[in-house]
Length: 114
Image 1 (cartoon, rainbow, N blue to C red):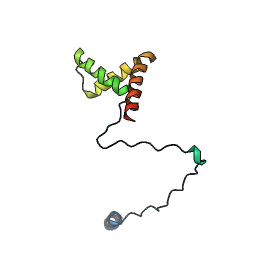
Image 2 (spheres, helix red, strand yellow):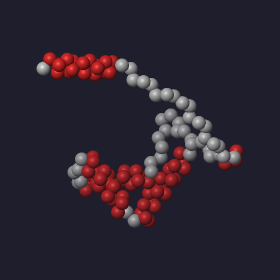
Image 3 (cartoon, helix red, strand yellow):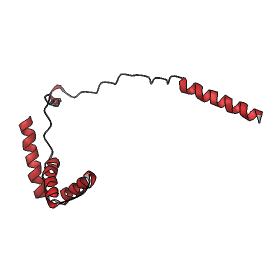
Image 4 (cartoon, rainbow, N blue to C red):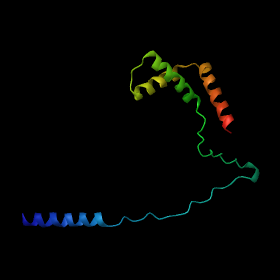
């Protein structure tokens, strides 16, 4: 019984000491520079948005905006998660021709932001 209590105290002291110890820092190494291609093959850097400017919505987001209004008009009474699921079902059920309309609209919006 006494030996068991001593062992328990010893283990708890070791555990407590481990909690107070600072974790070892991971060794820091600088990333190696990527091998660059020829000078003319470089890709242009991505454009940053100006302050307050938001990115153009994708075709799917354009579709969701319109369909969400239709869902409300139909009297769909689901929580946000259910609404998103229904929008996803409707997007997947669209024909390629119907999707193309939304995708073209989105690419026009992206071109206007550029």
